[in-house]
Image (cartoon, rainbow, N blue to C red; front, side, top):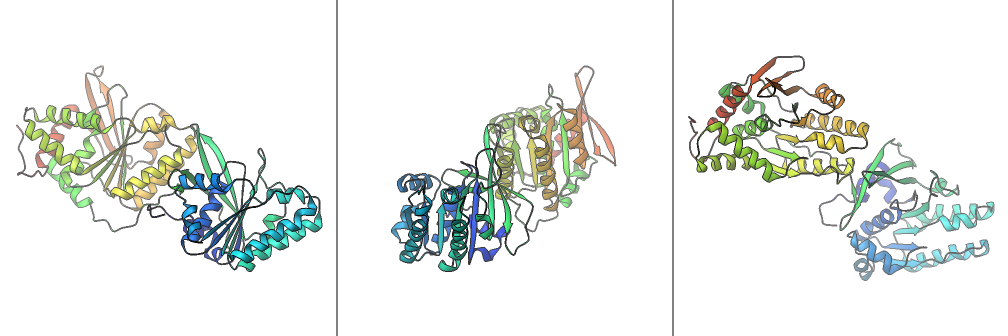
Length: 472
């Protein structure tokens, strides 16, 4: 568990409350394959790591198979069992109501012998189905499990099956004795399983109407797809940006936390326009996280070299390498294949990179690829809006560079942006014009030559290991 990820019981405490771990019953329900066994096992495992013995009672899977599967997720039950912190018991599946009380007595005997602080029963559904028509047995079962958390003075976790095509536990009753009910769900997006959980009941706590997204990853287990940006004091980078504006003459004032939307023409990617912000950042000494959905790092570096060679007009390899080295020293490059992840997984990865690198500016390049990859445009817009607000609060400048493909997405991005910059063809695309400005403020038009002159001034004021340079 020392892999830097947030513990499941700590995360769930935000929704269930801390008191649930002292003396409570949790019902985890879902259709087959939604992750009930993994979630209940993880609760058992993490509490055992805190020296709270866990009794794991299983009706379906064999011990060896279960332990092997859990170990692939980073949960080493064999190790905890060797320390006396976990005990596995395979419960018999009974088919007659007459064997029901013996089933419950076997649970009581194991509790008396092992004295756990956590009890997991995976799954309670067979017992519910056998006694479905017996009011007496149903009441007995409910009373038995209602008292269990008090008996062990700890946490009882019960899993229950929801039949395919249905949305509720088939046999009612068990959820009424629970202090918390968690419903697990699956949906398919980009041929990927998107997992979520909903907390349907919390006894004594305010019920939040929210969906918690998670994934189950090899060697890591359950990962909650929520990576809020770390809170830290940031210096006022606006001063540095204003200094560069004054030195180079691009009359557009960029403030910390603003969103800049840059749009290029698909047939003319305008690398000078694309690399404008990274060059401004390098000249200002600011850290840039450059996330591309389109090009790998080598392609971006090649574009950067071509732009610099074109602008400075000299064949000085040492000078070009010094400039590239300076720009890349302030920039972390990451490539993300948006077809590989669900939207929630992609968003989690992006937030994780921002938390890791702590940039002043985040550039998303080739966002049209990410927008085209989504099967959930409404969810995409929701996550984008959340990120804009999050970065604005942290005073991190957000830059999104896109080709002009979908007019609806273009208008949506422009609507949210503080500054919009667009490339336009003139003279049958023999020349380019760039329109930059605030939606409700100053607008300016820049020609290709003017943009090159501005980039040239940026390179001149860029602090290198040697003194500042003057380009001819």
